[in-house]
Amino acid sequence: MGSSWTQFVLLFFGASIMLAGVAGWFALADQDYQYRFVRSEDRQPTHAGSLGYYDSLDPEERELVDRAMAGETPRLESRSDLPPDVIERDGEYLVFRGYSHYDWANPRTFGPTAIGLLGLGMVVLAVRGDVRERRVG
View: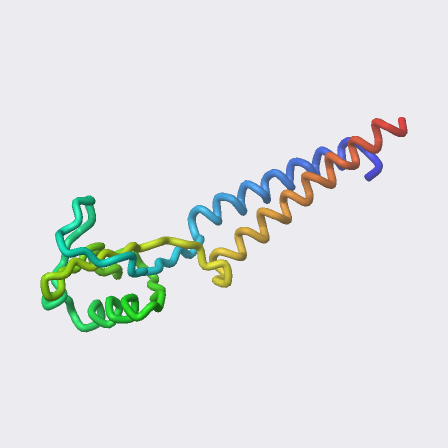
């Protein structure tokens, strides 16, 4: 890295690319949801979750509830696809939780992350070059 001007340009573009990656991640990251069975209770739980009735669920929601009850962890693309947190079935209250997580295999999540890391690498190179130049000179 010969000159401080080159290091400044590398630092400036590196920081810009890193910020673009961070902004892209916040705008585009693919967030998926998991639906898990937690417990069953004899009385209606007092927490603030939404209550639904098994008989009134549509077939897709019933399938998700049955899969979660069997120990699976169904994955959904949208929070609106999650069934209610508490479901009453035959006098028993089934408690579920919907968890969100980022799908790192999706290019919409991985791409901005890679761009941000590239920008971070450029910033590190610029700072490293500046530190070396100050030590030698």
